[in-house]
Length: 567
Image (cartoon, rainbow, N blue to C red; front, side, top):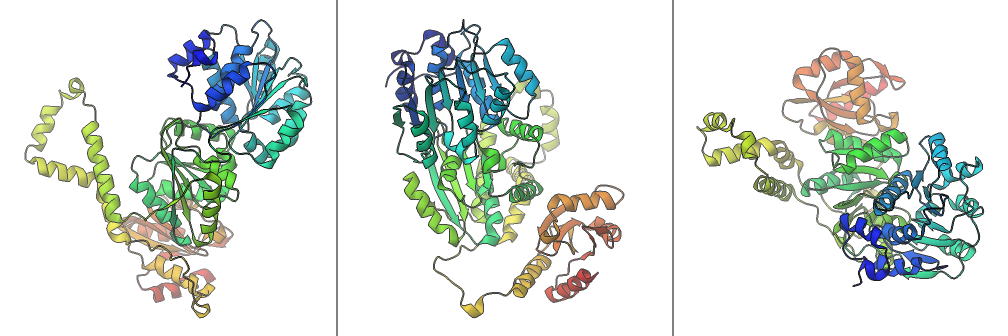
């Protein structure tokens, strides 16, 4: 293994990266850096996210900058605002001891006037999203005549996001003598087209195999019935108490629904999708990077370019249409030599996709067994014991209050204290899994006979019986409401109906079960009559609401639901 010195990296840069913890070059850096330090060497580098690509192109580009010439000499194009900021920050860290070297990130969602002012003051490197850079070019604010190097980072993602024409427009105003460096995790046809059109005789550097998945990632799939997907997601989260990951959903609506359900069920989660403003997205990402959020529920578009260290899990709440998207998703864990897990929650019809992905990434999926309630409780309890063993005790801070605590608890022996600590932490979890039952996995090849396929009426009846017959949480009453998913009802809307229509103290809401045309929700028994009194008959969602207590008898409940829907 070579050192950075042997690769030709300047001492002033080595000093900065050494302080950042860089010891030896990673494979992509060892291959790319010497090539880029030479003249007229164009490169196509295929490597997964998290393999050290930013340093691979960043270190040689910084070293080649003429700091006395205060003009843009290098342009880095990337697909998202988040990645743009991250690359700019990394380049600033690498050039910590390079006096007067200026790096400017330019992106949409921020003041273009301030970016124009910064460009007029002079910069050496521009890190940009394509759309904003074109705006600056059209306003005559970004002069790219002195650019010698153009880097396309996550080029496949930019093509997926429709930036092909924007890239053409930018390259048209850059000198033809410029060097082009193209970094990508996969090699779709669009990348080959760009290389053929704009690059001379590029050297192709591949770390691993083309389109291959990250080496340190374990791939698991859970085969489930579609109705059980969310329940299985909860079990995966509960079985991994230290989970820190991203849950990928297919649509903005599904993303928000899953995030709302997780939050309602007490998980430390939030959503990231295109309907959020840039300020909201920044706030969510800040919380996620600080680990104030354990589970980020996101769409592929919103999560493109996110670079977060130490993710333990990627969960695919259904597989993406494009295999390349799975490669990008799973590549966000198992980064920089660490291990990670990529999980897919699928149904029978998606099994063929698993085979296709296996061929592409050259890795086999393991079929996971859905954790039982007993296994989850044991895992959580041992997780608590580990945290207790490893907790740091500040003797000075607590010594003043410990005598009082000892006196308060001196009637309990050690075993009693441990039992109460465990019960305090896990009673709700244990109670839930005692009553939850186990989830059946669908059997491959199993098909219903034609006369056994449930009609729409039977499906609706089954959903009604499951909802009305379910036992409420202790101390809660289960209520029926004649609104469902087709009306646009979601958990936050249920909470909003309470806040807007039920006067007095705030209502504590328990479980919410959304059906197609009706739903069930739980409130404290002491609040039941007040909620029914103030919500029943209210007009919302374009109709008059019917609210009543859900009956234990399915047949009686169905009769009352039909009457309520007619109102």
